Length: 284
Ligand SMILES: O=C(O)CCC(=O)C(=O)O
Image 1: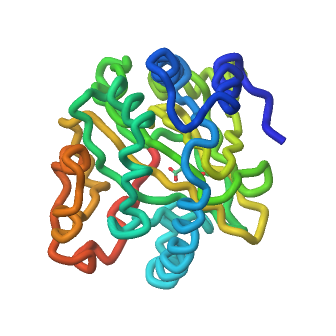
Image 2: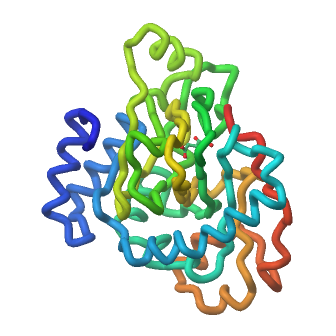
């Protein structure tokens, strides 16, 4: 059962029956406008479930080894883990990171020269808790108390269906374009509410990372992995995130992929990547 949806999300829902995986310009414009206005949009049934099933199978051992190696660091709160994905099969998948609809929306929001800077997952397990409401980035100009157009986006898609029980991501609509303090006040006074986003396998959320949000507890025994691909303005540098591109993979990339990945480090081998997650401080 999906939670009650706002008008703009209802309009997007109508598209579920229309999509063959591709949108026309007017629809792309509407998605981009929803991100500008609400801070996020959802593309329903967009990515291949078969592809995402291979991601989940390949991800499970990565999660186990992350927990074994550095689970004690609790990098996203209790029983909740941020795990970077290696840029190798099945995760180095152009049908996902070069999806033409996603990129058309991304480029409207963060520029035609946008970069792809992050490929990772957030996974709450049984025992996880409510996170503090937060943003994923600092403001660009904290002295002003005002916000700019978008500069960093997260493209999120779950590797299983997200239900009310397994820890849905919650977001406060429209809080990306005001200061965090103002957004928190709106939440405290009930003028905006946190909305759980119940995505099904294949659904894709594109969000401005400034929208106030939090992770919620997973009450089931099955991990709920949410993949995240970060796209941002070309000039933004977040030392916490990067994609280590193996030299061998570089040679197989499309022109567009090379351009998207152009500021990421190229490594001899994927084993050269940092042994511990670099992105530990996450809530702004
Ligand atoms: O995937 C989630 O439930 C949200 C996680 C989150 O917002 C974070 O760790 O920054």
